[in-house]
Length: 165
Length: 124
Image (cartoon, rainbow over all chains, first blue to last red; front, side, top):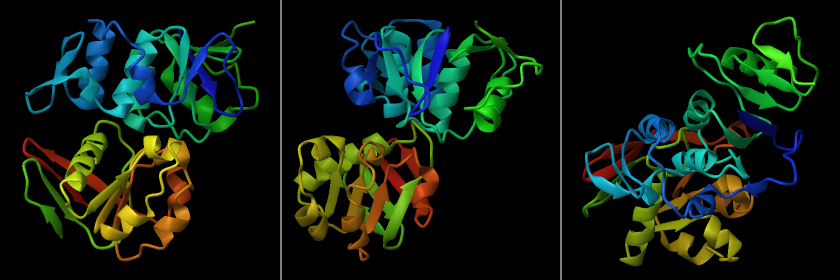
């Protein structure tokens, strides 16, 4: 599942290493970027590029570039999929990168800024996203929670959310 | 209009003022920063500052004073640190990569990047 923490309100567990600098975090992926459906989709969605191999991609103009040249937001997203024992701060990610992570990443750990202002998406596929004591299966329900309920208790009668304990 | 006719070119179609990039990843901000960094070394009237400079306690005042266009990259990671300096440079075009507290600098203008295979353009 994808675990979400909220900066200043919902802290990650101590066993996760916090990555506050996405550029630095990206350099910890020493084996390169794995060829996975999710990584390919993140590069395509955020940077309009095409995954080529563990060290290179094709940029939007058709040129081969090292993956070190993807945007900072894309690096943060690739850290989410590649560094399972870390939690990645999303403060440098634009809304498009955060939305891509929420839509595409099926595992990983992220810290959202408290003033994160929403997920504009028509994606209605089933998700497995945990925020504190709650599991969300719907991005729309997650958006409603973050914008209108957090840090108060959510309304469990609205679909797309369940209590974990 | 400010222009550097190199390959890749930089074209800044803005009047002096403070501009914040629209809140999207992958738009080309990091590439623009890298071009500024390179061209500043060639003596072009641009200057740039990023998180690395902040961590190394670099004072950018002298470089900023010489430049016509300044790019401040990844300001989320050291926000407010350069606010006084920015406020003192009214005659410059100042471009800020700043996402987290998007509304906190609401007095600033918005700008956007247009990428081309041989250069980069910034407009309002």
